[in-house]
Figure 1 (cartoon, rainbow, N blue to C red):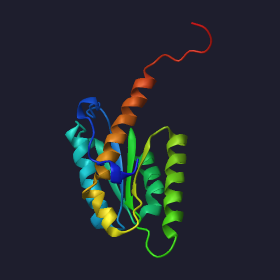
Figure 2: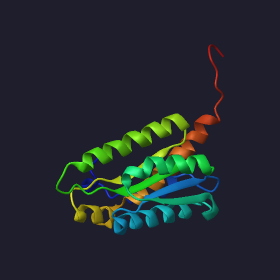
Figure 3: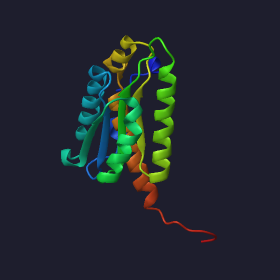
Length: 172
């Protein structure tokens, strides 16, 4: 669903698991920092609002969106994390550079998540212009940082829920 049709900050708080026993990594791109830092603040606030201990939230900054997958890999390697949230913003501009960067980030995070088993959350804005970015970083469409944090909590809870079930092959 397009964010123009949905507020990125709206979710059912009652249905969201507690983040009390969870640990998170957050990788923030410095490029478009006015936008990315607004996304980061909303993400961080949402995690702590739902019980995440500030000591269990590890943040690093990378130069730009292209470096998000490698930043996530470094966090996974160096810190105990149940999920890594990657936050960035690539504004379309005059060339098609955005397509290459956005695709590379999406593929890198997907591959990293599948190979490590640690959810790598795609918190990358891909707007056509700066106003669209602002609208999704606390403006009229809410804040994708909130959505990324909620996604991370849900994925960690899902992982814990499915990991607790007995694995069996064959007949019971």
